[in-house]
Length: 392
Ligand SMILES: *Cc1c(COP(=O)(O)O)cnc(C)c1O
Image (cartoon, rainbow, N blue to C red; front, side, top):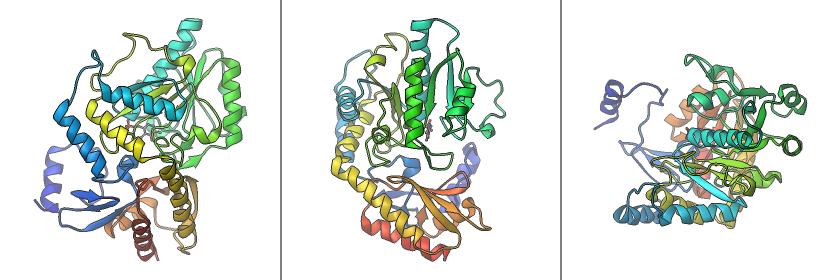
């Protein structure tokens, strides 16, 4: 099958919910991908922050293969080793107390929302189920997580949306106080807003917010679906902010490309979701859990330090390219936003970069780079050279 035939097949039989680039991807190795015609692409996108340890990592392939030969699925009504060992690794390295596993980011956030509402219900009864989220946030595509998302463009078509969310201006304690009330049980935020434009939160604001949550007995819920699993240079971004969330969600990068998501709860919240209150048929799948263990083992302290170094290197190099279409950079670790200036939109720039062999993402009005965390320096330099040639 060639590219044209594939596009025709897709358009005939697949719901056209995505604005796809006119490129297909067939296989990959490290942070390098190839299309059906064999053309090479450097990947600065990792899917969307998913392929955390690149493509065809031998240990990841081996773990998946071995687990598939042993046990591909078993219901959560039975104990099984891979997810229990994964939970141990996650808790030990994050300082959290217990894990719940699902399959995606939106589902993980739904779990956190349920956890917060039940914590409050158990302690205070009904009428205290409102969750405060931030303007410009993104929390997922289910009805509830769309409602939680603090961007009006997402609150369309699918009426009725849910009650129980109010939005505050990111970075402003005054704005948070304005929307506060006796009906609030939690605040949910991303420490670096991803889809909203790669916007890191101010540490002082995050600290003040955590203090306010503790005072009001609101749960502090951190959506680390994009920032988690090493993306920002620590296993979770909250570890750089000096806070201990009540619950954290993760997904995207956790299993290196297989679908998995989940939540971690701290000691006081570990038993809020008791037997029968929350579940997922596929959650904690043994193959995904085996893959995730390889991801965590690969992202040791040394690899995480390199995430920060490589992220800084990429940002410095881009800022010194002298391109009229790109401005300053921002972000944390290898979660990078690049300001787009001038006439051409970020989408148009991204399409040209992709056509020339560099996969990038957009966020807000800017470019977003989420390279595989294990990308080699040679691949980084190759990608940056494509960027320079394309945009010069
Ligand atoms: C991607 C993302 C989600 C949604 O994850 P899905 O796996 O697509 O459901 C939620 N929150 C944040 C911060 C994300 O970046």
